[in-house]
Structure formats: structure tokens, C-alpha cells
Length: 355
Image (cartoon, rainbow, N blue to C red; front, side):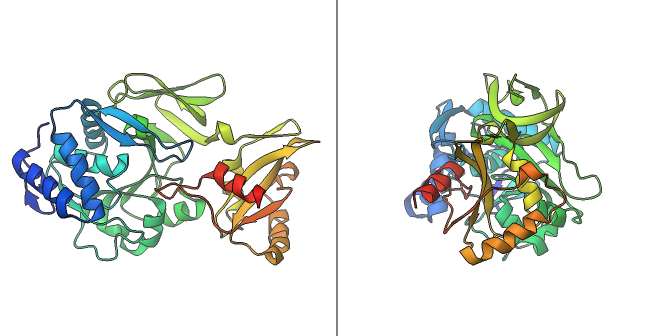
């Protein structure tokens, strides 16, 4: 694969041969994140047409899938075009190179000719930041922990998990361009973004160039992105379709609760409840003889004596209708997570119900 002549890695201009040497040295004697980055770079520089990547396992079992390098290049070009990223721009990789988001920061740098700094992934990546960056990607926890330093990044993408209502409210005042992203490993990271900072923040996702969207009979998103995946992708994400390039995300079809004939979307209820709950939590449905499914609230690290107080706060919420009230609060000592920090709802629920 060609390397852009303006590409730099940690401040050093590298040709194909130079990058191969760096990648090899990382694999042999680098830190864990450098080993993962080096492994990927060696795969990228090899004559093969595909690379193997792992999914995070947030909505199912983790698995390895094969992605075409050509499609990864197309994804990088689409991102560069949409965000008007110019060659020579300074970028930061603070995500794990083990997963697609980290790998694609490396690809974007090589394809677009960026000056990429690769640092060890942590929950506080901006603590020792040197200078300003034109482009970076983070998960919500990293953004939350670096709120006072976000002004150092001109364009910031947030992915890996949903941006909470509280975090979104804090980001509204930021003057730089911050975007929530929608995508998955199969679509080679984001195929749609929505701006969540500044006066023109939006609740609607806009797709990247040469991507279109539609709905299936369930109301779930269907993605047509021939430049990054050959087949149309039918998701389990419930959406409100604005047009074929804009949509609003509502929640996961497989999380929907049918309680007494009323369909409840947990993610929408969680947004309402987030104003009174500080611990991590999620809404789920469990079997019930009378209702079919009973809606419960699963919360992390809450003592039994605190539950009654929380019940009262929930009852006082004017945004909740009567049938949207959780019928039970169950506490979990610690949620099950994917390696990228996403909550595994079904595994957590199964563990809690067995205990």
C-alpha cells in the first residue's frame, strides 16, 4: 500500500521501508499498544488485499472479520473529505490499535498524509498533551476526563459508546468541532456523524460521502455504503429516518421490552433517567407471567438502603409516564464490559439474576 509523502509518525517522516522498520521494532520490543500497532502496520504493508480485525462484542460474541484494504482506504478518504482534513494536519491516536477505531487512525494518517502522534491508551489521554491537534478520536470516558483540555483538539470524534445526556450538555459550550459517530467494525468505523458542540449542535446523524440509509419493516437502519462494504448492512438499530442521508438513533431493536402490549425502548428511558442517576445503569426486561416482560432498572454499585430514595426521585420525574416507571431496581456490584469498555447488558443481567 502507498504511504503519503507527508505522513509522519511521532514526528518522523517515514517511507514504506522506514515504516516497516518501525513496525518491526515495535513488535519485537515495544509496549503492548505498540506491539498491536506494529502488528497491524506489518499486515497493512504486506501484499495481501485484506486484514483481519476483531469486533468489540458489545452486541454479540466478539468475532474476527476480514476487511478489504481498499475499503479502509475509501473510509479514510471519506473522513478526510467530510471533515476537510488536509495533508500535514496533526492527529492524535490515543485509542487501542487492537480495534478498528485505532487501526483506522493509522490508516487515515498514512492515506491522508497526517502527522500522527501515537500514545499509550488510557482513560486520561490529554493529561500530558503537548501542543494542539487538528484531529483525534476518543471514547466518552476519555472525553469526560479531559474536558478542560479539549480546546487543544480542533476536530474530535467520539465513538465506542453513546454520549450521555450530561456529557453532551457539557460539550455544547465547546468552540471546537466535536462529533458523535455512528458505525461498527463492519462499516470500518463511522458512516455517519452528528455535531454535538457549539450553537449548531444536532440530534440528527448525517452520513459520509457515498453512503445512503433506509429502514426495514422493523424500523431498523439499513446501510448502503458500497465504497466500504460490498453488501448492504441491515442493523438492529431502531431509527427515525429523516431522509436517505439523515437519521435519528432511537435504540436497539433487541433491547425493546414488550410489557403488557406496550413497547418500551430502553435507551430512550435511560436518557430520561440519567438526570437523576449518577451511577452506571441500564433498563432491561425480564419474564413476567402477567405482563409478558417486566421492566427493571439495573444499577451498578448501589446499596439496598439507597434504592428507596432513588425510587422517589424517579417518581418525581415529570418526563416519565406511569408505564415507563421501572417495576424493580436491581443492583450489580460491577457491570460486565467488553475490552473497549462497553457495558454488556445481557451478560450483566444474567449474572445479576443468578446471584
